Image (cartoon, rainbow, N blue to C red; front, side, top):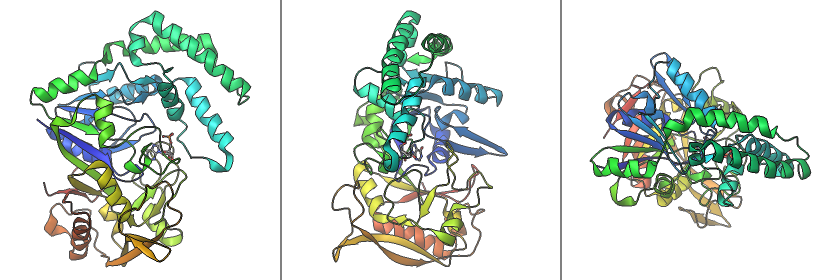
Length: 430
Ligand code: IMP
């Protein structure tokens, strides 16, 4: 049975949690493979809004087993808090349902302090990180000095590793950044308590997923962040420190491509970004306010993790084609189409221009987008509220034309269209 992937095609916040929740209905296993609690996935079921940062959104569908793969960096404190919250809501988060890879890396208080310290030091060149310790944890992983969850299986080992890590990190924090270091012994004791709680959850996720696939089970990999934040293929250096792409899914789960099935690129019907970095189709003023929303609704464009207002703009087809190339999408899921209701005209970036040349695909990687001006085309908007549309024929002709335009532009079918935050506010075409 297939390994289906849900991958962000933009700068994150595309609505992957919502698409995961939908497809998790038919999944046996749902797995996160990259990032940490910098992600914020919202799923609305009835009058309950679930905000998940670490545990896959598939946890809300009761028949699934949820895994956190080796490509993740996990703050144990946040994970335990998330488990407790889900438990209060009556969701089973027992070790039979939740697996943590022993090869996933542990985020420590020193990583969080270092994230803030490094951002401060960057001054004008700030990345605008979520300050969750993500970059420093991956830095330690790459430097081969990180702490893996498997160390938590042995109290002596985790105590020794935490103590060595904090001693080393304190040298950096105190001498380079003039920061106060977390109390070492206290932190060690806290992590020993976390280890006690999380020990039953730690397993070999790679072999678990591989076995599920060979047993004919349906595995869904839930991406976090988005392609344009990929460490190698994003708008470097304004990226995260992991690989939220198709290749990252295989790497961060520990399985090969043989079972790959659907690779669903999730994109909003427009474009958003949090944090710094290039954004060729960015809008300001009234149009931006209209796209962003006031912040009164949980689905308005304010960060789930940080609450920061998101930057907004028209959909960038050049970057969408780029994401398609990097990931090999088999189809697209378009989210938040309902937000475009009420716009007289919808603009779509079909190409970039630079030095009187036009580019329909990116001539180089997306790290330097400054030389390019977006070339827009204008499509008719619609006035109708489409939040109660449940089938293709419920959509106004202009909304259908917009979707068909995206299909023609990318050569990909649009299999899912979401028209509101509720679980049932969706049009499925596959
Ligand atoms: P970090 O992942 O906290 O290091 O942040 C690096 C960049 O990625 C910043 O621009 C963040 O705003 C952005 N980022 C990280 N996670 C997310 C996410 O889940 N959604 C949107 N942007 C994100």
